[in-house]
Length: 523
Image (tube, rainbow, N blue to C red; front, side):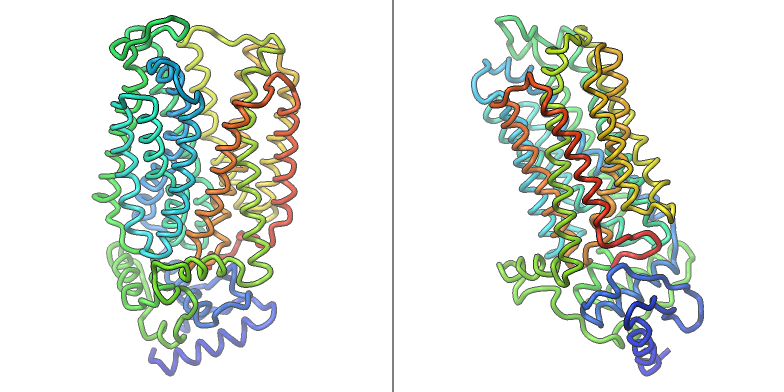
């Protein structure tokens, strides 16, 4: 088809998307059954909308390939790394603090980790919209792995905190980059897999449990935390946890580069206006897996030139302003962005706050858990393994038309709330373990769907920035929860009820989300 023919397609696109009508098929040979793009009916750049529709059609035309399986596994490893590094520092803090003389801020590693995760989310999120997804995707885990290995050799509490923060910085953008990169290659009918991918978060937690179970139990590697003397030679367990974690992340980093060999994502190239590279990318993918792809540079150029996706210079306040303002381009998009950020803030406080108060709450009620480290870490690992299956159920539920993403989040939040209220009746160690497993399962129904929903409804040109800011709000709440753990009275039952109420608030917010991605394609 020539340029004139594609101009007719663009005119037909503009005509049929006026008002509330659904988008038409844009490929005249009928080879692609086009779907509705989530933001197509918003008052955005018409050239961007038209090109986005063509690109989505091309991705749908290619369909699911082995490349998507590679992305699912290796992007999922990024999820696992994020949960692993968040939990590792909290689990090794007590033995490390004892070894370094119990001098300094006891919750310092928790705050250092969240501070690094906060800066990393903003840096890699904003950076991915400026320099592209590819470079941030490839280098962030290398920083994380190197810092983790060095953290295992830290000579002091302060130096450990510094490298823990660097680990967080390197891994802090994973939730942003992994979902963004995977989504921007996904055919519309498979976007529900983005929710399922959160099961890797549970794998990361389980790996943490197994590492701690293996290294923090043997007495030859762990000194008595109630004793007086704790030399490095008798306390290598926590260091082995970091060495092993860093080595694992390094292997994953190398696999990302050697197996995926990621090219820049099609939708980032679209926002860049690099039509030739976009077409070459998708045509190359189609050729590799013997799939059709009718997208051409001429079709994209016929739609016009995209404007407003970048500032005058890339590394400037104007560039940042363009990406943030793009998240509020219309009232409906602005409302969506605000509610997403609120949701990340609420769960960022509720999730860690519960565990901050849990141990003291159980002691006040006379519920004593196992004292043998073997059983402590066994129970911890069981709870984390349970979290793997929440996203599996969420992936099934969110692909049901009656529920979609929004009502799956509502269900996940309300069920979690119910079990949090039920926790107030826990009287035995076995009940505690059972409730921990069930809550880990239920909370990940909500969490996994929120992970996927966030990039799905954000505009592609500003997706990483909006996602990064959302995760940053989550990290800020993590820092606040660590401070609360230090200064607040943890003997009261009030925090349990507050946590449950926060999940009720999340359900209400999810109900009022203005966009439902089910049956629609990301824009």
